[in-house]
Amino acid sequence: MAMMRRKLVAGNWKMNGLQKDRQFLSDLATLHSETPNADVLLCPPATLLTSMAATRPGWLMLGGQDCAMTQSGAHTGDISAEMLADLGCSHVIVGHSERRADHGETDAVVRAKAQAAIQAGLIPIICVGETLEQRESGLAEAVVVSQLSAGVPECEAGQVVIAYEPVWAIGTGRTASPEDAQAMHAALRAAWSGADSAALRILYGGSMNPGNADALLSQSDVDGGLIGGASLKPDQFASIIRTLR
Ligand code: 13P
Image 1: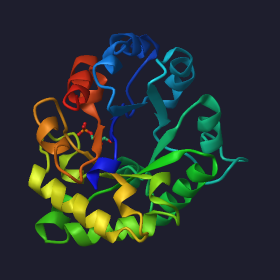
Image 2: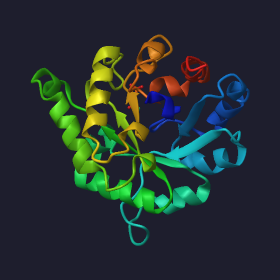
Image 3: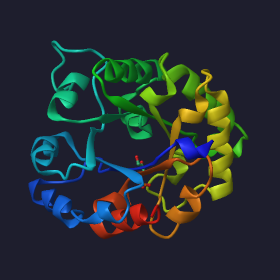
């Protein structure tokens, strides 16, 4: 059933990127003529979204890295899903392990943020993933499946994207093996509560780079990648996208 799902490559710039880095978009300008079969999304810091929204090529989608769980009001420093949609964003990352760790975000918070995103017409990319300790204790699948059931609001498969990002693989240069990634993605799909699990897009994230992307992205349940470090370098990001030609 993988035929139904277009691959999605998403770049997460995290807290990186200044005005001068808008140049990145020109570096990627001609890429899509080579890879018309993949969707490409960039999630720069919120400070770059306005200018990138004005200059992005039409095929490059933009997303936020987080959104508030409420729609508007007295929440200094927060950015609502509606504000992101208003800028032209199509997606927003929620529940990244860095936000879970740095800001104490629980599955309930992640679920409320995903719900707010859907309400604003955005597709939340809901991140799940186990720590090294949990993997070594044989708990990886249980942890990740529980994050899925507690963190995803009631919705159709096409309204969300799931990102499996093992915490021990993020920024470490270590990736899940293609077989382990495939097994976890299949477990997540099997745990999806709706009958439409074949339409659910599940991305892999964690030290994906031009050298390992092909092996990971060719797994039948790996529907794309959520790329951190390698998405900051246009040649590396492009090279990952080109594996989907
Ligand atoms: P790295 O690709 O830098 O490991 O980051 C992955 C990630 O956290 C993407 O959201």
